[in-house]
Image 1: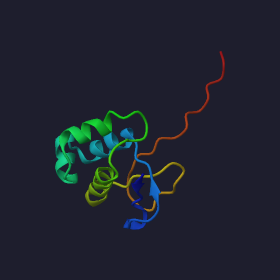
Image 2: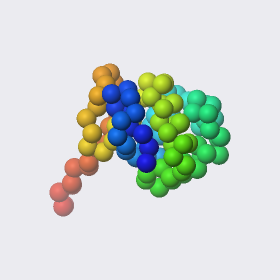
Image 3: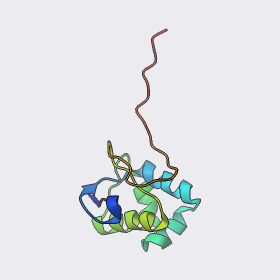
Length: 102
């Protein structure tokens, strides 16, 4: 589990997904190497995290460093069904609408 960044503090816990990591990097317009520097983890660590299927797997300390790096850079990672505590623009994945059968 990774530390939750809501209320700009470290309270509770939630998981970060590989998709959230990629989206966070895209919002910051940085590559994996830059995220590794910001989080003080190795490039292969970021690569392994982003290659995860669904929730990121890894050492809790490394996961926490990545979440905290995103927080410092201004990216709010929103957990499943969690409200956004911040303001400003953002991206959130919603459930797709079911398509009627043709």
